[in-house]
Image (tube, rainbow, N blue to C red; front, side, top):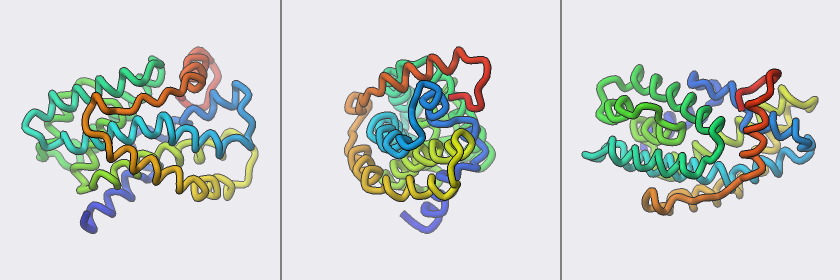
Length: 225
């Protein structure tokens, strides 16, 4: 991967990327409402990396590989369907598609004439990891960097939300991210080993799924999910 790809990886991993990710807590807000203790947040981040994070990272890797294929639209649709089948919660699927649309808009603005953007445009509502995979292809990221970007984005989403949800020193979330490095790299290896949609991990997180359903029914909330 060249220097341009390295820079694109940093940009895509930036929580300030204008795709709507700032409105998500990575399930932390509903988790805290359900009784998750603040001191459990680092374990929660690592748990997400091994479940939801792994599924999304592997999906993004597959989408990156398929982005420039002659049958890109059909391949990306199959990948998206496989991802959605592993996301039982309707509210989480909706949130993923909201962020995916933000990423699709970003791709159209930055790489308007690129072939993968046309494929992305043909997808009615690309989920976040599919759109991220296409952005990774456009930015010149390799498989490992794509997976790492997806996983880091998930972890930093939770860490950033924590500063708004619990009374903590803002330095603490930085510590959490640094201490989950080994778990993140393990999931990178597992994500890049996936060979196709049928091989996509199905790492269940039923408690988080239930939390998302409860959260969607609440009238007072800070984050979408």
